[in-house]
Image 1 (cartoon, rainbow, N blue to C red):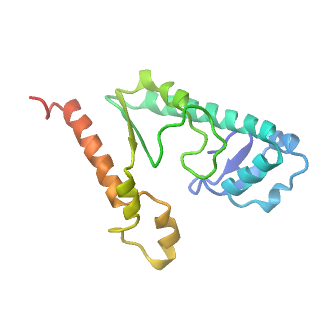
Image 2: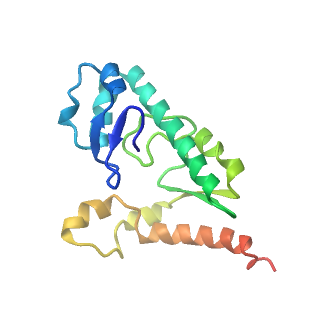
Image 3: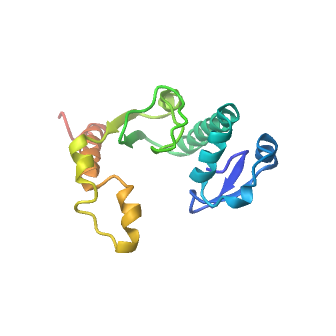
Length: 175
């Protein structure tokens, strides 16, 4: 997500476009022209200084909450916020660059609670994760990207969780 420290491609938000003057001042020893991917850049910045990196993650968290609030303000009707990941919502901010979504915390999600009807936290089961890409259709060229996605079995679990909540919201269950 573009923020006060750096810009990303509008459609490929994993692509780093440019560092802001603010980021260049924070990390004067870094040549930002060597980065093409956000995660690569973030990993390098974290390795250089955890203290300075914390400033970036705080900015990203504030930007995410503000943009989510703005988005939710534009939606009319009931809203279900779905956390769908391979791990629970972290209690606090983390510099973990291995799991998506990056740098979110329970406090950030809870900051949205009064703007949504309900929050569903779904951690895919081990058995669904073990199935990986089984049942997915993709080309050989897309295999690496597919392997990073939650597979069909995990998505079935999400659909089941949503079906119950949405069924209640639509008055179809419990009549």
